[in-house]
Length: 153
Image (cartoon, rainbow, N blue to C red):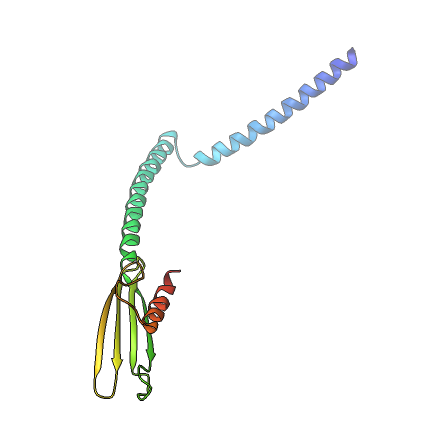
């Protein structure tokens, strides 16, 4: 029984040493935190940080709204452009005919094509919606539209 009391006293002594060590470390940390300030200055600093945090939250919300607006506008901006040159007629060389597709991310735009022959040149414009046109597109116009839309894949 006496050994049990010695063991209990030893355990309590170890616990006291551990608690004192923790207390000393906490005191050092508190002293380091408040060095050069008094409690009022520290409280003012915390309130200032809270105020600054509220300001930054407002700015972040503003930036997020601006970012969302830019994303919406970017979807309708012309960014996909491709041109396909070709020979429309066997007797005319130099690939003077062309089809150019100009489209936005939401699939709206236009396909402009020019067919060149020795005695004249015809220009056509076909509106595009959802990356297709209500007018029949030639193979070259389809190819130009497909290449212009690759940027959005």
